[in-house]
Length: 121
Image (tube, rainbow, N blue to C red; front, top):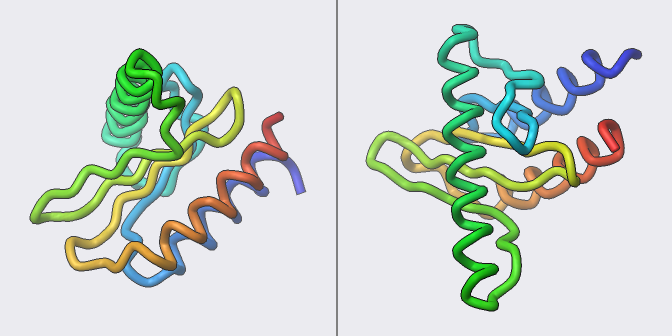
């Protein structure tokens, strides 16, 4: 399998977790690497804005001496957005259904981010 196929499988496995609607892999500066979002322009905006939020959270917590956050979670009445680092080069971003339980999702997101880190270096 090539890199794209491996990343596709990682996102496919995440989508099969109950409550996950969509996911994407982006570079740390917000460029879309791969997603399972059908509209490319939405996927690119999703990746860019999520990277911006995670970067801002990392800056804020570092400035306060609290270290780098493991992830950010943004909750609304329409769903939850989870963004986490996947190595030095990438981010994993997941959007869930509004009532999705985060326990299993967070465990699987952590596993997937480690796989992405191994794949992309």
